Each structure stands twice: as structure tokens, then as C-alpha cells.
Length: 505
Image (cartoon, rainbow, N blue to C red; front, side):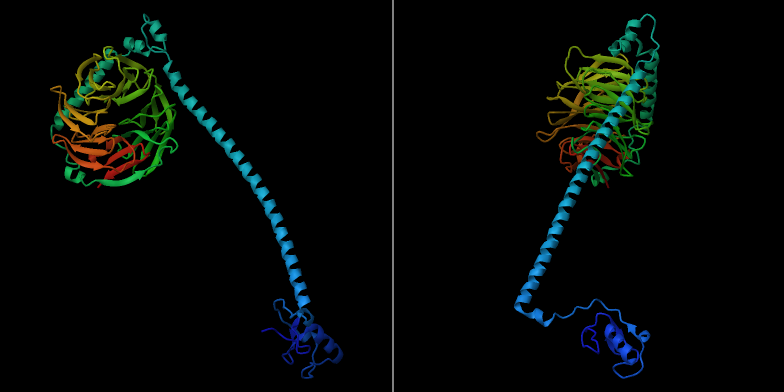
């Protein structure tokens, strides 16, 4: 309800109240009345201007004058309102256009700044990679202890095989390999045929389910994880190599990336985690093998053992030497400390690319797979082919030795896994898989009790019975790597769908 002046009976512009009569007045009118009479107009009591009390109210809306209620006056009022709205709308449009221009300019500046930052980041990355490459190369050309009678071989540079053949496989190295093999054989005999008590039993393994999946380790623009390994001394550390040319170290417990290692010019097809050092190895079709420091996050050595893409990688039990296979038809045995190739051999009678390589647990023999479906067993000390296992009908994709040293598992592009007895040199079991099944990875657990197969899906078999205890189909692409945790307490896998998955109870 509006306040009304007691004198004019209209809504006052500046209302005030008289403490004498408690009536509301327009201040202008009551002041004139007090100046003339000196009393309150309502009861005649004495009243002064100082006694008046102002009332704070919102701005009053006065009723329109009677003249404004005619049709012409209403039309004029509407026209005035329309004109005011149009003027206000025009002003808003001008302000909107100015704001749009300012925003467009700001976005252009932001885009230009982002392009400059991206270019600078690319240049910094390229410079770091070049520096990481130059450092190990500088180490490779350092003076070596070469007999004086062989200066040409020492200075060849482009012929590491010739240098290696003459000065690499020294009696000291061969003795070191023999001593390590003796120790490993003795330990294996002590363990005997008993299964470790901590090993997960088959009935529990069959209950494994996917417990974690991580898809952000490698680039989404070039999807695919091509290789996988688990650190033997700390199975929480998982190593992956991707189609994006990167090597990634992932912490399973923390669920975060420990290191992203960049330097390869092509995709990374093989990775290995050193069992006792914070060092990892990777191989690529760019014909290089790289040694990385996980703590430093940088490349500390580049081994240039081949002239074509490296297809397989295996670490010797001493932890000091690497075996590699290549599309150039050679296998190479290299020193990871110096980057020197100690020996490099090919089977001239075969004349086909090698597709994979793996050391036997004692380190004195190893196996290679070929593109013409052959499995070859080699004597490392003599550097000779001592046995061949024919039987597959497609290129061999993966081989794995059992920890007991008796069994060899091989997979090929013929949708089968074959088990070989190294004592009798024959195939004693063939696991026929579904039609068009692609075997990409084979691995025994550390006790040799279980065999995992990765390819179109994941399958786990219990050795001796060779019966299937697990089958996972969670990956949406080919499974390129599988590996067991300590005592098979978990199983991990990686695939072309860019995901790293973990399975356990």
C-alpha cells in the first residue's frame, strides 16, 4: 500500500512523518505550512521543520494524469516505448558486434600462440632425441682394446660383425656364460619337480576376472600396443612398446605412468625389463635396439646390430648381453654396456628372415623362428645351428622356453601352438586353435606350470595336461602381449585396442 500525503492526498515524492500527529506529508508542502503557521495542520499542535522525520521508500510510481488515458495519449505512449526499445536493441547489436570482433581476434591470437608452442615443443623433442642418439653413438666409437694386427677391422665401423667375430666372443665371455649356466642348472635341480607353494592353483586361476583396464598409455592417433613385459624383480612395473614409437613404464599399484621413453623412428615391436636394474630394452623396425634408463627417462645406449628391422629380443640370464633377430636374416649377440655386437650369424642355407628369438633358461642355447615356418635351435658358444623343428605351415610368430628347460612352445600363422620336447627333439603336443586364430604372444609363468597364449583372445593352459583353464575375450583388437605376475598372482595383457588389462581374483 502506497503512502499518501495528508494535505494533497497524492503519493509524496519525499515523504516525511510528523511526530505530533503521526501523519505522512509531502515535505515540500508541510514545510510551507509550518513556515506560515508553525503548527501541525492536522491537530494544530506546535511543529517545527527539525521535528519532521524522513521516510525512506522506493521511488514511487505516480498514477498517470487523466489526460494520458485518452486513445491518442496511449498511442503516443506506446510509440515512445517502441522507439526506446528499438534504440536499446540497436545499442545492444552494436555492442554484440564489437564483442564478436574482439573474441575473434583473441581466438586468432590464441591459435597462433598454440601453433608456436607446438612447433617449439616439437623442436625441443627432436633436439633431445638427437642428443640421446649422439651420446651412445659417441660411446660406440670410443677406442676399444683391439689387437694391433687387426686395425682394419677395428676401424670399419660399418661391419660390426667382423669386429665382433675377431675380438668379441673372447674366452672370458664364453667362460662367463658357462659359469652362469652351471649355476642356473644347479638351482633348477634343487627346485626339482615341486611346484612353489605360493603359486596360484589351477582352481583359483580359473576364477580370474578382469580387475583393471588402462587405455591412455599410448597415443590414440597411432593406436596399438605391440609388445609387453613385466619386471621380474618388481612385478608392479609393466613395460609396453607401442605403434606410436614410444616405450612406456607403467606402475600397476599406483595406476600411473612412471616413464615415457621416446627415440625410435618406427613402432616398437619388442621390449624387455632388466631383472635387477632400472633399465629396459626395446627393438624396432628402424633397425636399432635401444637401452633406456627408467629413472633418468633417457636413452643410454643404441645397439646397431642389424641392417633391417629387428623382430625379436631376449636378455641373457647374466643380464649383460642381448640376443636379437632381424629381417636381415641374422641373429646377433651384443654387449649392452658397450653397445658392441659380439657375434652375428646367419643360416646361409635358409636365406629367409628371422621373426623371433628367445634364450633357453640356462643361456647356452636359444631358439629362433623364421618366416618359412622353421624353428631353429642354436648353440651360442659354437654359433652353430644344432637342431631344427619343422611342422608349422606359416611364419613363426612367437617362441617360449619353459623354466624347467625341457619344453619349447611355438606359435605361427597356422592357428596352432606346438609343444616340443628338447630332450627327444620332437613335437609331443599340438594345440589347434580356432580357424584364423592369430598367435601373437606365448609365455610360461616363472614356475613353468602355466602357458598363456595371446592373439585373437587370451588363453591359459596348464602344462602337462595342456588343458585350457582360462579364456578372456575382453580386448577388442588382437592381443599382442601376455605376461604373468609373480607366482601367477595376476595376468596382464596388451593389444591393438591400445589397452593394458590386468586379471586376478
